[in-house]
Length: 357
Ligand code: MRU
Image 1 (cartoon, helix red, strand yellow):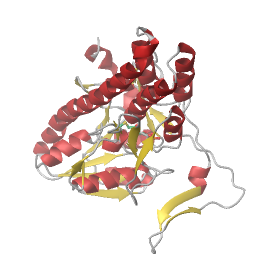
Image 2 (tube, helix red, strand yellow; image 1 turned 90 degrees about the vertical axis):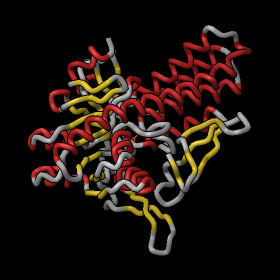
Image 3 (spheres, protein in one colour; image 1 turned 60 degrees about the vertical axis):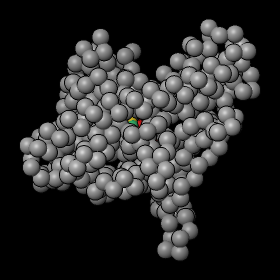
Image 4 (cartoon, protein in one colour; image 1 turned 45 degrees about the horizontal axis):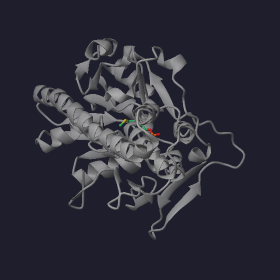
């Protein structure tokens, strides 16, 4: 997407071919920094600290992590160690393991001296494919949104949770790709952006990227969605996913489930935009089977923001000594999901398998 007239991806090989560059998402929305990662350890750190985040993007980042590892060594034992380190960074998004396994599979058929080049090529391919998948999701979702807007006749109000825009992918985003396409086609859309505590991916990232693209949006407190739905102010909920099971249970940022419950109660359609690498065909029941990442309590206890003087600071908002629990994802059961938007089309959650026979 464009930032100040220049097209950006969230991750790319450096011009000298010796490193990977990322947009550091921990600096947004107050500063735009590109970081250069030169080693496997740099990439492990970037994923763990969420300089890169979002399921498709951490898949792409992990693939480049394997490529960076091959700059040090290319023997099987080292590659197994690198894969393990990358997979351990974040447990919930299945894209990470998918991408690491894909690179390893390619490398196993190649002699050690050819593995470095092959790993870089495969990582670049995964990135290009991610862009194409998201564009396809965007086109299907665009059809959905434009039909809804045509029926309604006035501005279409879309509620989204967390960040499933281009910052969460290599480009375009999943849930926001249809929104960008609708906006670009002149269809009047407005996005309700859940702030998405505790890390505020909605307030800091979704609001930033929608603003840069000129898409009308309003940030709301996480708990406002149900109220807006009761008053008819939300036409559709669109979210991304970190892992979707074969029967269509959708795991996404904590709080998504509550939005789905409110949408169900108010007859508001609830869609998840899901590229196929986010589907875990080995799992059926999301609630019992998907590993849910537990993150540090510091994310609740502290918030980062800009002071009136312009300094970016972290401040503590909890009293000393209070216990904190911070599960980072939840599972929305398939029965609450109206449809899943994939690169192959849109289907009810229980018909995913028919789209991917
Ligand atoms: O913890 P994060 O920021 O990596 O969580 C990201 C999400 O939950 C997104 O909604 C999901 O990955 C969307 S897929 C574009």
